[in-house]
Length: 184
Image (cartoon, rainbow, N blue to C red; front, side):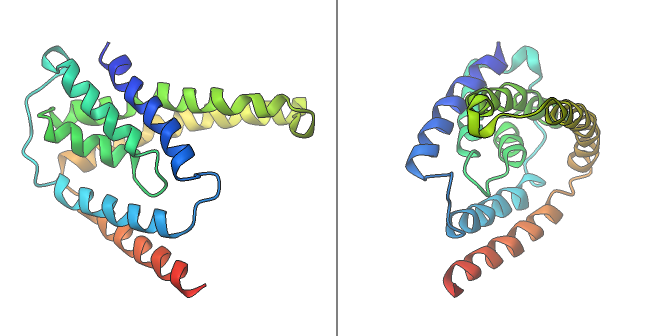
């Protein structure tokens, strides 16, 4: 039920942001600023005290707030997992549960986004061959395996409080994107 509650605001915000920010053709300025915001979130996540909330005592309000955060993370440059992890920890979730919940709640969001885009595959100009369809299936299987490995890796990184290293990368890439926006 928690995942369903989180998915509703994610879907609404994802659709709104796609229209408002014209995410089909974003400039480098929006992702650059968003990467700086992601860097700020990741720089504080290690300092957030470990909460004690597990699935049994996480509220629907917590799930809705984390879902709103995931919806905001549909903006290019905002890390979905970094945002949901940070907001989960700020809502008192246990670190291990926050990581697992972040990845589990990505499944309906990703599936929903794919369903919205799948109609394009059946338009005559975009029709895919059976070989391409097999490639999509293989890609999905590989993504599932890599996703599993990422969850295990993230659990170690979050437990050892090493997220700040990702923030350095986000700050650097955000600065590069903003500079490239103004240089062109």
